Image (cartoon, rainbow, N blue to C red; front, top):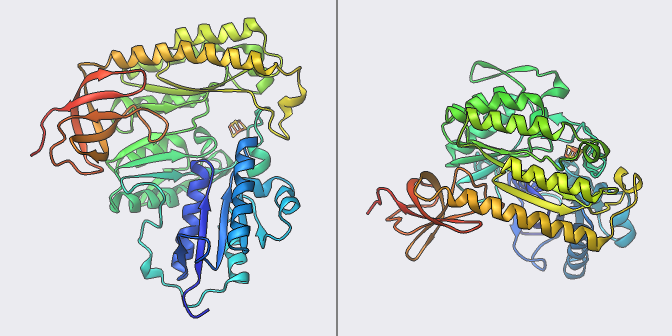
Amino acid sequence: MSHPAKIGFVSLGCPKATVDSEHILTQLRAEGYLISPSYDEADLVVINTCGFIDAAVEESLDAIGEALAENGKVIVTGCLGAKGDIVQQNFPNVLAVTGPHATQEVMDAIHNHCPPQHDPFVDLVPAQGIRLTPKHYAYLKISEGCNHRCTFCIIPALRGDLVSRPVNDVLAEAERLRDAGVQELLVISQDTSAYGVDVKYKTAFWNGMPVKTRMTELCEALATLDIWVRLHYVYPYPHVDEVIPLMAEGKILPYLDIPFQHASARVLKAMKRPASSEKVLHRIQQWRRDCPDLTLRSTFIVGFPGETEAEFEELLDFLDEAQLDRVGCFAYSPVDGAAANAIAEHIPPEVQQERLERFMLKQAAISAARLQAKIGSRQQVIIDALSDNGAIGRSRADAPDIDGLVYIENAGDASIGDLMDVTITAADEHDLWAIADEPSC
Ligand code: SF4
């Protein structure tokens, strides 16, 4: 090869996989590789796969098949790579297969099949690395793996037990991202509230200050960066209560993405999930007393093996009581290898579907009422996009891609990433409309 080697890259899966992709892309650029936008121009193709549900497996296998047909030299990484030998069985001619979070293994495989042509061009890499999200927000992955064993989930089998990143590394990355113009950090992991358990909350030093490897202390340190900080995938441990005052004081966004999964004590136990619904409701009330602006996002599973109609109705009652802002809901899907597949009789798909629809109908009304109640309120929004006659942003209650948008009529000369104060004028069941309080011109 006379030109710098070109690598094609396909990134599938969740935000955690996106962060893995960013790490690999950053390393590739650091070593002087070019990134190819098409299969036929690439010297080889890396596919970062997802193996979580059957549809994701299909999508990943399709992508591998297409890359092999179009290019022929393919390295597979990500969750599907950790799922036994499914990749090799389907595609014996892939060059290498790794599990997730395996930047070095992927780089080793690339070096074997497509050696770098030059010394590292470290200077060509922006300090913040290569990112796949827009410039004004970024995912900040704080750990890998998970110590829980929820019976419906195979992530611990795919990704292993919890491994927390050193808190000084996480904070240094956050600082670099802020310095590169990022206005919003989305803290992600499999289990954000468990951060540091594996290292016994070890103290490290960041900018000369001691900081414990622990969610609350991490949030306090991130708050000093003076940008939006949003917490995702927070497991409902008791110490989650500690971050609510930081939200009430405006240090981090008043937003908790906290998967409750169900409300029936028996189903939660069968899922190996914590907490009774009464305790959860009590805590939600307390959180809202302490931080009235708090937005709660959660996810639930309906039609779990053995779920009775009465247990499902307990869940509907819980929704009425909890008045959550944003909710995702899935019908139980028997992922290969999940312990829950064997614990009780499966709910017929038509019953699962009927429960899912009843659940979504109830929650849609709750979410819509909560958005309607915002009409007339003042909100701060971050601008994601500009349109002909205004701008599209998100309020502090809206995470990118999964929550709603705010359509602003008179955004003046706003730029992407700007923070803007607006007054809400209308709402539907998902999005808000607003006018800027002090339009710039
Ligand atoms: S806490 Fe999340 S990642 Fe861990 S086992 Fe449960 S569902 Fe899976």
